[in-house]
Image (cartoon, rainbow, N blue to C red):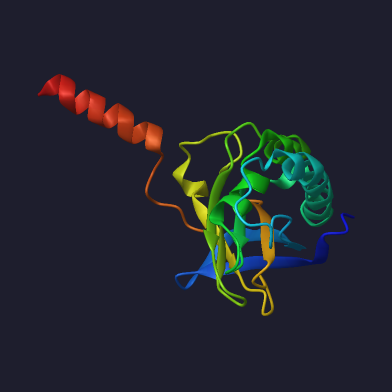
Amino acid sequence: MPADIRKIVTFIETTHQEGGKDAPRPITSVVVAAVLRNPWAGEGFVEDLSPEIVRLAPELGKMMSAALVAHLPKEHVQAYGKAAVVGTSGEIEHAAALIHTLRFGDVYREAVDGTAFLSFINTRVGAGALLSVPMIHKSETGKRSHFITSTFQIADAPGPDEIVIAIGASDGGRVHPRIGDRFKDLEDIAAERKRA
């Protein structure tokens, strides 16, 4: 485990009912979050972030992916996403640097057999803020049923000189999806334009 990590937190949520109606089956989502020291903290403006990206991102990707699939095996993962939040003394670029690299994203995609881009957030927050991991289907990007979000909090993170990196996955989409797929909308709009 990288020495920069203070702690790993795992959140598991299983939904059995939504809108007063039972789910066809329970839907489980898992978030694994790593709280680590911001490697650029106290250094002022750093032009080249790549040495720390190369040092940290692949190791974070491997360790966090392994922790996630221990709770939700890759064959069950349908939706996925990632998030990075920096504490108040850091730059948003510091958070973004560790997740917006193939050295992190490809490791996670391969661990769960995903092919789609990883939806994401990157922002700056104070300790204890409500954090979100937006997700999409791991291979069908227009599948709106899997446009979902997991939310979580870590009471003492991120500290001012810390970053929280999170990955999330779900074994299904929303409990009762009823708005159709993006691809169907595109077909319908194209047909309407032809008729017009």
